Length: 497
Image 1 (cartoon, rainbow, N blue to C red):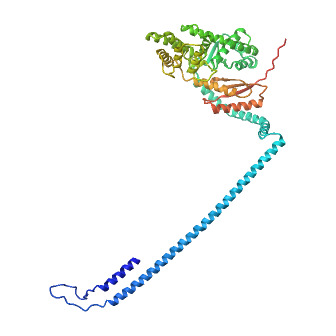
Image 2 (cartoon, rainbow, N blue to C red; image 1 turned 45 degrees about the horizontal axis):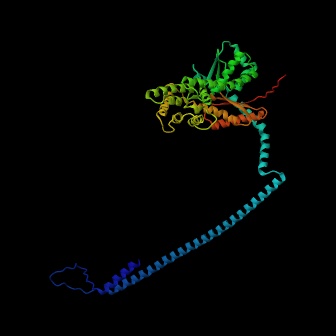
Image 3 (cartoon, helix red, strand yellow; image 1 turned 90 degrees about the vertical axis):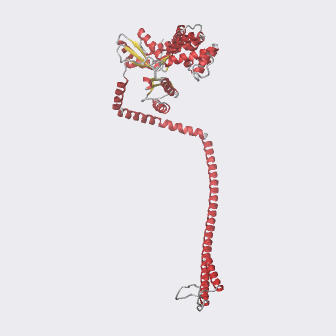
């Protein structure tokens, strides 16, 4: 506004120095060749003075307005500055109070910790126990007090669930049996004993089922007597099933089927099994034309009779692979004996169960221990391409293994995971204190746990069953459900002389 006023004042002053043209009220100004007529000049002094006066008034008003704006702005700034200073002071004061309170709290916490430590020390001196020892004493007392209650509640809950699920379980079982019915059962899970007299089954069952119960407990197999003319022994472990088969055949020939006799024969058969497997190893070696191998290696080869790889029996696989390898070596002019031994021994590490490692590494370690030739150990080490091939013989062993394992009908579905799951199932039970033995039945759908009656009472057995159930659910993946039975049986045996 000040700029406008200055401009207006300058215009007024410039008018004083310039002449003002006459203005006619009648006609417009016309220029011609004739001399222009002049009129008397208008008195402009009064108008100039009036304009100057108005300009001064406007300037004064503008200055007053600008002063008011300036004062208002200064007041606003001063007001905000005072407000900020006031808030800053309040914030500093509050921070100071918070800092003081935090220091006081830290000091009180230190005092409380010291008092707590002093009280704990006094309590330990008075009780003659450390803190951890007192904790264990209290936990032990509480555990003992609630053991019976927990076992009772578990039994009641299981009974209620069993009653509610009875009807549904029948439907599920009938449907499962309908879909699972088949005319053929693979030999790698079931052994069949033919009988001519059905009365034999009565002797196997015994009074109140004592004989069959003892047989299943000590052998770890499941006995099926439902089919006429045969007895089926079911178990995932082929060695355990073979012990049961030989035991039952001897008991039937002997005629004395009694709990004590069953246990005696089982122990005898277990001792004879090493000899049987050694003989099977010799048969395998002679079948492929290999002689004079170290006895421990022959014993390991005999275990192939009770070992399966993806459903393919190891003896059948080894025999087939070795014949293929020999034929290929003869065709290409390779070292036949090296290929023969490489094919025969390539999977020997699969029957070494007491050490950790892949079957390739375990097999190589065993062969080096008994001084087998380097070319043969190389064939074993390279038959899965774990290391590069070093000879034509190693490549022929690899090719023979691939042909035998991949031909149509050689192998079934992956049974390795199935066998591992059943073994893990038994190991979970064996890890509990007081467990004597554990057996997986019904293709892993039932787990029977034998406990020492002297160290495990009825309440502990009930709790143990629940704990095993929880571990199985957390650690294993399995179809359907698994029944867990913890069996506590007290026997008193004396011999009259």
